[in-house]
Length: 138
Image (cartoon, rainbow, N blue to C red):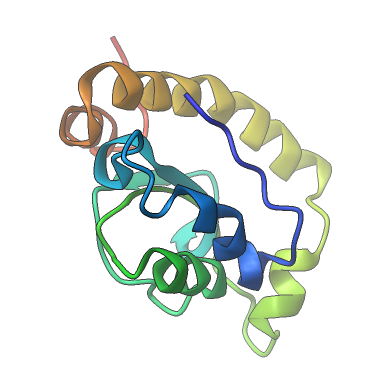
């Protein structure tokens, strides 16, 4: 497994993936999971997707351009909604408050389990198991 953390601005994050394109050892549909914030999802909710559009997310647009494909898995972590009248770029760059940080810390084990499921069983099973409410409760 390879973990890639872009050292660029978010809207240029696709650059970090260019080396994987055309590498026969990497199946981008199976081996790549892109993790992004998403203000279209409520805060504290996450969703796995096997493919799809960038939906206006500049980071995903960069990834899509680098891969020349929408066929890659993504883990979208809700940080929304954007307060009325606020620029979305300013909103996503604001630091989290204590209550938000606490909520994210509580969410981390569930996202960990979802990613582990993706690694072990694939994106379809992970979506089926974790997208109902973003959290599986056994």
